[in-house]
Image (cartoon, rainbow, N blue to C red; front, side, top):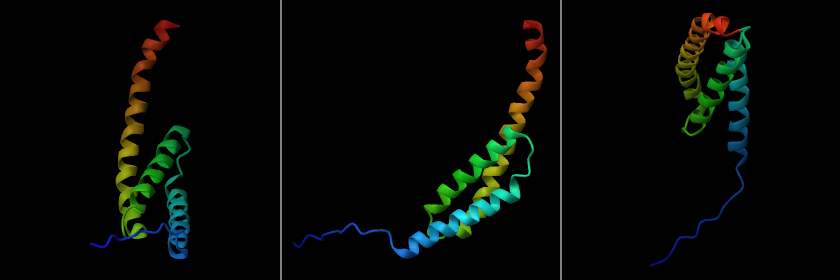
Length: 99
């Protein structure tokens, strides 16, 4: 029985180009969705874009999958940011009493 030998090859030009295209597309989508003036919300959005890009990169068609994943991640990020704001607002009376 003959064993197959695997060579580790440098990333092909195509994969480097795809990575560059994905990064450019990610930045474009981030620009569209980062209109939030609140830095807390912006950090949630930025993290969502990075997570979506990481997951998309693992698929055969990252540029096709990225917008759909991003919408899902952004919905989750907005929900988390709203929850954080609600917790912050509801804790203010307690913080005021402690001061």
